[in-house]
Every structure is written in C-alpha cells, then in structure tokens.
Image 1 (tube, helix red, strand yellow):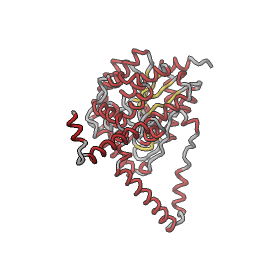
Image 2 (cartoon, one colour):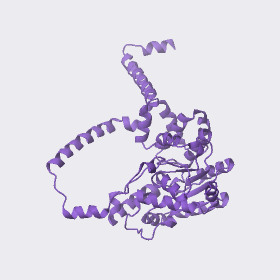
Image 3 (cartoon, helix red, strand yellow):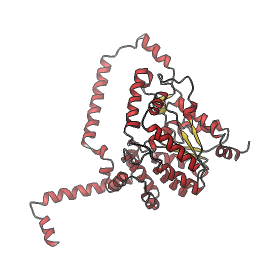
Image 4 (cartoon, helix red, strand yellow):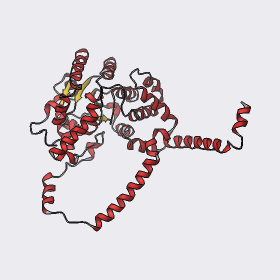
Length: 393
C-alpha cells in the first residue's frame, strides 16, 4: 500500500492525481451545496419534478384534514382544479392535486406511505387510470428517480421501504444510487457544456431577433385582428384555482387546425403507444392492495383524451391487452371507476381542439368542466356519498 501511495505521488503523476482530487472535492462541495440549498428545488422544478413545490403547497392546506387526494400524471396535474371540484361538490371539502409529470404507480405507493406516516390517511384517494402508466421499464427513468430522491429527503427512514419494492425498475435504482453521490450526475443535463452553450446561444439569438423584430415591425392587419378576437379571451386563472396543486396548460397552436391536430395526434401516438411494448397492471394492483390493507377508499379516474387520440388508441395493438387487463383487475379488486371519456361533449369533434390543450391534456376550460363533472359523478358512488354525507347541510 505504501509503495502504491509513493507511485501516486511520483512527479509525473501529480498533475493527474491533483486533477482527480480537485474534481472529487468540487463534486462533494457542489453536491452538498445544491442538496441543502434552494437550488435543489429550483433544479428539480426545471426538470419537471413538481413534488417539492407541491409538498410545500400541501403543508399550507391542513394535510392532516385532507378529504380527497388525487394522485396521477401530468393529466391530473393539468386536469384537476381542486376549487372547482370542491365548489361542484357543494360541501367544504379539502382536496389536493398531486399530479406529477411521468408519474408511476410505484411512486404513488411510495408517496402514499410517506403521506400516511407524515399526515395520516386521506379520507378518499382518487388514482388516475391510464394505459401509459401500466408499465415496468420506467421510460425517462431520471424523473422517477428525482421523485424518489425527494421522498427520501423528506423521510429518510422510509428509504428501505421504497427500495424493497420488487417492482421498482432497475434503471431507477441505478439512477437513484449514482445521483445521490453526485449532483453533477443528478443534474447532468443542466451542467452539460452542450446545454450551457445552447442557453448562451439562445440568449444571443433572442437579443438579435428582438432587434430585428423592432426594426422590421409591421402593424397587425384587420384580418389578423379579427382572427384573434374570434378566439376569445382565455379563461382567467385565479389564485384559488392553483393554490392546491393544479397547473394550467394552454392550448397548443397545433390544436387550432385539423392539419395541426393530425400532427399532434401522430406525435402523441409515437410517444404513448408506439414506444410502449405492452401493458402491465402489477404496480396498480400492488397500490390497490396496499390501500385495501390500510382501509383507504379508492376510486380510479380516467381523464378524457382528444377523440382523435382515442380513435388511434382503439386501433392500436395495446387496446385489447389494456381492456382485458383492466377488466381482470376490476373483477379481482372491485374498485370503482369513473371514465370521463364517456362524458366528452358531443360538440367535441376529431377535427377541432376544443377542450384539449394537446391530444392528452385539457385546457383550463376543459379542466374546469371535467373537474365539476368528476364531483357530480363521484357523488353517485358509495365512496363519494360517504364523504359527502359526513358534512351536514
């Protein structure tokens, strides 16, 4: 060992050793500095990890007295307006939107375990039901790893519980391990030279484009003005609508024309259908089993998709497996389902954007409509009636 140390201190190797030591020290300082500073939350949010921000919102709204917790993906994040849901219920319910982009059922289970330890049980759990969440291989695994990292930071004593989940994807485990040792890895896309140079280039281009636009500005024509006025003002977003987890999503420009809708549906099909090999209900089945064991009432909710996307999925290879797997799950668990696709207005056609920001997500107007519908449909289920009747008139 002494000889090995002498060899490392040889004059010819000293620059290399010094470089490695400097890098290790920089990594350690950076990792500790980011982990225990506001930068951690900022970087997480930029990566799409809304969980730290939503936890802060939740803690400000009596989580120990939570009536309805809605867990899901970006469809829930953009679709569930708690204030509209509560208003439509006609009772002073306390609900929260815990929709997270690229969420998965094993993460929902981990969060529920954390929530129960920290705040107690919600009185009713709404869980998003979607074919795209029925997976095992954790595509875009870096984001699930960030969710687990956040949960571990909040409750380190539950780390073993999370890691022992037999359905936790191997690539998520690896990412969680390596990123815990280095923020340079955890936020490697942020710190990459390509990203930094790209941001600098974009900044210069935006300044250049701003100068060119000012120099070549033209007045809006009467036809363009008429087109803008026909679109109508956007629905006003009030603070009460966003304070408990809802994030609005404005309509994509592609959803304003039939040709644009076809392109958007084709892109959504590639992401949500083509790249998914098959459907697996194992993670959802485990989540429902845990809820049954803990006596937490559950209702599954399918958010509406644009009719053109629904048609594309119905014609896909995944559809038969999904429908058969879902029926088998429901017959085994007897879990109630609210399918809001059955409530899409007749005026919503395949060739207009209407209530949809893109083929899979609702506009604020759509979110308001379907959040109210959800409250009315939930009231007809035993789980909803029990919740509503607990509040006297």
